[in-house]
Length: 235
Length: 235
DNA sequence: CCAATTATTTGAACGCGTTCAAAAAAGGAA
DNA sequence: TTCCTTTTTTGAACGCGTTCAAATAATTGG
Image (cartoon, rainbow over all chains, first blue to last red; front, side, top):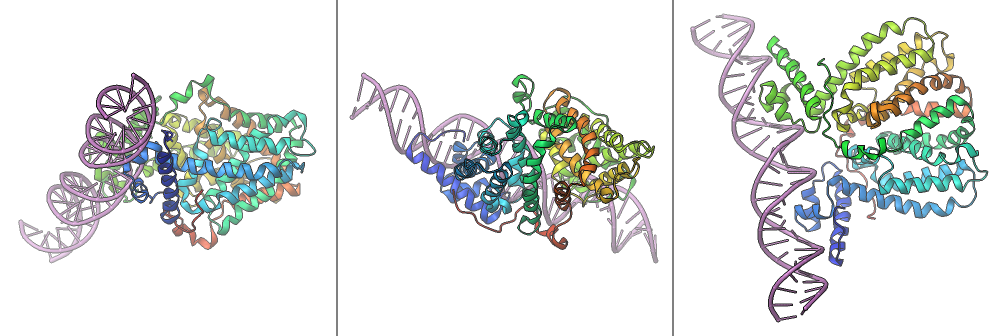
């Protein structure tokens, strides 16, 4: 949200907007739910919706953030019980997809925002990372020391890809990607061992490098969407 | 294109629109290049641009298709020389990123379209698949018979992920993702062997299942963006 | 209490992608 | 030529996400 509500009525208005947006998305899908319709259904003017949310996408981001927070609270207990790494991975994938399931049919444009954010900077990413850290640190036996530190980041990245596949999965009940999740857990757990092989290990590190911020943090400004730099030959 | 030009002047107009769009994208980025600006610079009216391209995205798709065609012609020779699987993979990844490099700075919105298409149906996907089939069938020694048939599909999927990482890579010269490509080739080649392990093999098959079309092809119609189905609880 | 500051709310506007009915131009058959 | 069909081209409009200056309401300090 662009402006945090500073009065109680403000918070009510913001909450009402969020709830109304959710209704609209559920009824008409993401794209067909216009800001005008959301604002109108919430009983406020169009421009006022932009007082609390600086864009339509930010409404989505807020909804997804709430979802992750719920999942975090729900998972925290299970991950501290000393189960295997594989079991912990499954637990997070399962609860994650359960939380997101109602949003699946909001349309591709909705869930595309899950993947599109520049990783690692925003609040939702840090919550996800915390979850995966608990997955690793709470597992028994602990994974090899060499990758224990970086494994959470890696699992975050892999889970993003899986949820992306799930988001676009059109098979009934997302059967395909759910199967993928089920089989992903044991493979990821065994991957920890494979990381002893130099080839796999170097790949592991390159994948991780993708998550780090750009050159000294200068690029956050420069990566705004209109970015004219080079000019290719016509084809 | 929504309408194929049926006269010579029509083809000229369409080509002029494509070339002008490319210029605009290179100068101002994708988002900042409005259809009005493109049409105006091409010397036609706004609505006329929609006679040959049914959307702005379709202009991008056409540019990318031309690019893949060039890459296909360029690669075909190298892939028939009987090099190793690893070498062939590298060749395709390298020529692919070389072809796409000038488009990298058009903005994230531009290259997002590469990943967003529903895989396997459109013309650009079938060209990509043809390339990966040549990668496999032209490699010596040939990969194990058990996965030889499905390996091209798998490589297509993996390469999509890699190019997606590259598209969003903000490190200078996309250093990170290029390194990832370099290390990907030997791992993918060795992966063929690992597929003998049942765990890896089942994952391989689930990943492949993601690429097949939905239930009996009915869903292509139903997956249009406004898709209201369920209604989640408010949060 | 009144004024000053801050928070909320609005209406009007802008540029965008896209659509559509209809005008203009081109081609072919008589 | 004239008429008819097909192809190309246009101008005007619609709804969208977003912005902004200005109006209203709430809060605070004297």
